[in-house]
Length: 312
Image (cartoon, rainbow, N blue to C red; front, side):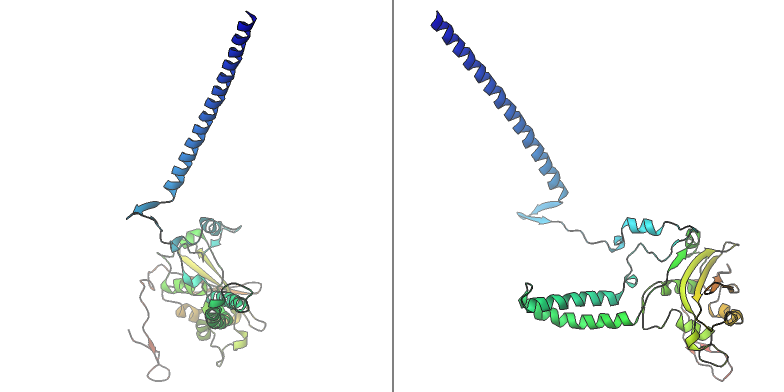
């Protein structure tokens, strides 16, 4: 009897152990199955995101072309559209890619300098790529020289602060000359002494009798786009005067300024500031000076005293 009970108890314990092992095994299998399902789902999602496909038994990756129009991030665009305390935004910011907004001097200088440094390092076995060191030195040296030359002759763009409502009038109210002024002075230029140098030479008669000496010529330091009281587009040129330049040099040439930057411009206005003056060019709403037409070539007058001839 005792032996039978002992055997029955042993079988019961053994059965409980089997049940326990079976439960653990089932639990482990369940967890393993869940883990496999999760890994399969993650792999499927990753595979769907790769945008890959099979072609002729070979896996190829679909590469999308780079969109230069979205070169600037949305954060930069949002920052440029945030108005300051006076309600002005960055009027020189362009969402689309424009190569003129980049400094060719900086590009040539940094790229050429990088090639030179790496080429010398590779030539003296400080860096890998000894076989290509000569090529890097050959292309890096002229690129650096060109970068230095462009950097020396570079004229940085001036800042442009604009009212959002004035920017909306560029296409409908601004004249071609107003748009040309804004586009020219808000990009990098090379070889010019200063912005609007030809215009200032004509208006202020630089180096001529009753004109302004070249050493006193004002410097354009900024632009503003505003809307006039009658709803017209206004472009404000901000100049910084040098010591010895008098504001009356602008006042007595207001008519000449209006004619030079016309047609389609009201009488120019001049307002003195702490360090210079502001010249305001406001469209007259007549529609003159618009249409995208280019002025013809100006020929010298037939006789002294006669106006210059236009080929158109």
